[in-house]
Every structure is written in C-alpha cells, then in structure tokens.
Image (cartoon, rainbow, N blue to C red; front, side):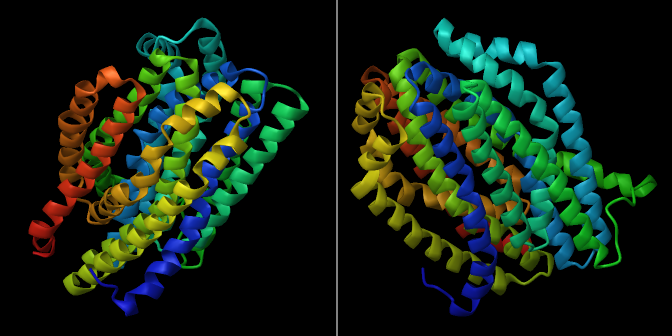
Amino acid sequence: MKIVRNQVPAILAMALPMVLSNITVPLLGLVDTAVIGHLDDSVYLAGVALGSSIITFLLWIVGFLRMSTTGSVAQAMGRKHYQQAIRTWQHSVLLALIIALFLILFQRPIWQAAVALAAPKMDIATHALAYFQIRIWGAPAALINLATLGCLLGMRQAKAPMWILISANLINICGDLFFVIGLNWTVAGVATASLIADMFAAVTGIFILNRLWKQHGLSLWTFPTGAALSGFTSLLNLNRDIFFRSLALQLCFTFMTFQGSRLGQDILAANMVLLNFLLLVSFALDGFAYAIEALAGEALGAGNLKQFEKLVTTTLTLSFFISLVFCLVFTWAGNTIISLLTDIDSVRHTATQYMGWLTMLPALAVWSYIFDGIYIGATQARIMRNAMLCCSFLVFFPSWWLLRNTGNHALWFAMTTFMIARGLSLGWHYRRYHHLWFQ
C-alpha cells in the first residue's frame, strides 16, 4: 500500500474532526471509570460495567441507523439528489422513534433477560439496575443522534458532529463530577449525566442539520408522501442486514462482559477498564472509517472507480500507521493509565495481568474498522452481515470455547482472533469483487 498524496487533504479534512470528536466518547468512558473507580468499593464499578454494557448493546445493535444513513446520504449527494438525502434522514428518525418506543415499553423483560444471562451478584445487579432504569429513557434521543450523525457525515459535514459530540461529552463529564462527587449519587449520577448529554446532543444536532439544509433552500420539515415513502422500504432492507451484523458484533462484546461477570467482580471491573482502551482505539480510528464512508460513498454515487480505489488505499495506509502509535502508547504507559483510572488494588492487579492483549490489538483491529467504513459507504450491507456472522460464530465463540479453561485469557484471545478475522474476510472480498459495484 502507498499513500496517494492528493487524496490526503480530503481524507484528513473529514477524518481529523471525527477523530477529535470520537475520542471524547471513550475518554468519557475513562472519566466514568475514574470517577466510579475511586469510590470505596469495586461493586460500583462492576455495576456500571454491567448496566452500561446492556445499554450499549441495545444502542449499538441499532447502529444501522447511522451506518445506513451515512452511506445512503453520501450516494445521494454524489448524484446531487438532495431531497432524497433529506428523506433518508426523515425515514431514519421515524425508525429511531419506533425502536426507542419498543425499548422503553419492554425494558422490564429486557432487563430480566440480561440478568439471567449475566448472573451477577445481588449487589452488582442492584447498581446495574439503577443505571439501566435511568439510561433507557434516553433511547429516543440517543437513536435520533445516530440518524443525525449519519446524515451530517454523508453530507461531508465533519465539523458539525465534532462540536456536537465534544459539547455533549463535556456536559456528561461535568454531570459526572456534579452528581457523583458533588451529590454522591454514585451509579445513578453517572447514568443521569449521560441521559442529559444525550438529550442535549439530539436537540443541537437537529438544529444544526436544519440550518445546513436551509442554506440550500431546503427544509427538514417537508415530509414525504406517496411515492416518496417507498424509500423507507429500501432503508428497512439495508438496515435489516446491518442490524444482524451489529447484533453479532455486540453479542461478542456483551459476552465478554457477561462471562466476565461469571468470573468474578474484579474480572468484570478490570475488563471494563481494559475495554475502554479498545474503545479509545476504535473510536479514534473510526474517524478515518467515517471519512471513507462519506468519500467512498460519494465516489461510488458519481461512478468514479479510480477515485474510489485511491481513497481506500490512502485511508488504509494512514490508519495503520496511527494504530502503531496506539500500540506503542499502550506498551509504554498501559499500566500507568490503569493506575490513574482506579486505586482499587485488586482491580489494578487484575487489569495489568491482561494488558498484554491490548498492546497488539490496535494494529490487528484497524483493518476491520476501515473495511467496515468502505462497505458502509458502498451500502454493501449483505456482505458485512455475512462476514460478521462468520467471524462471530465461526471464530470468536469457538476460540473462546477452545481456551475456556484459561479464564479471562480465553475471552481476550477470542476478541483478538475475532478482530483479525473481520479484517481478513472483508479485505479478501474487497480485493476480488469491489469493481463490480461500479457496473
């Protein structure tokens, strides 16, 4: 691979704002961990780990709202079909509200199923429930945020979501400090801060998106009727495939949390600390994935194969070198960062035992993040779905099963092989078939 220099400015113009905004998400997780991790008992950290894992699972399996919106809007922009781009956002918001209503109405059976699978101790379950019952009411705002973010990225408006995410996460961090340290609300304080931040982001995002379209003489509030509603069916078909892809992905991450819960309170808390390292990498590198979604989608919409291939090559190269930086940082400073996040000796000691897995994961996982972005931009959701199902059920779970007697090491081995398989499967398919997308 080599960098195509004339592609670098366009990629960086999209990627860097998203890297800056994306890293505030795992940094927020690090702040949550640091605030809770310095309380007098690891049960609070374990409770937040379990509660946030359930909420994350529910929200991330609906990540298709952002992904499908980005790819569809980017291709509409490439064809200069601006009204179609607006309709895509409207359809995504409608679907977001339907799904959010379902989550709120069925929160009790969802919680009961999660507890049955995780089998946590009673005190951990109590704190996890307190977190879950507050955060679930933020589902409408959180899901609308996904649709709005997807539309902004598809329009190549990277700075707007940057400021939205940074502002929302700063509000969340301030809320953590106020509710947890100031009012001593512990787990409920972390959840309340996140709820407020989600609502702020939803309102701000819609306001900014509407202002951007007004500059083109268009409005978000011109609702589709008749034939225009047919696009909703196409979006549902695209979302269906991405849903199953996201479901398989989240099953793997949630399994780590639930199985960690079965291995003990300190393992559960330590894995929460370590997964924040992986989230930091994934959200940072997703800035480049978001860039390739919009840029490649636009090139595909315009039918420009050479431009598409240059963008892919350059993005893969840039993101790989950045992943190596993360490897070096985790190697040199990983244990120091763990000590900053928690002063509970048992959690520190447990986390350092598994830090070695994190030192190599960035360079192994980067390919999966970028190829995800390529396939989202190309709206090749069926291929993403099939690859993820194979990687989850033929790689992740068998890998864990083979080494299950090694405890937590089996979970991290499974995660590592899973990330490698994701990159290899999509990379192989791209190399053989991507030219067919332009026929």
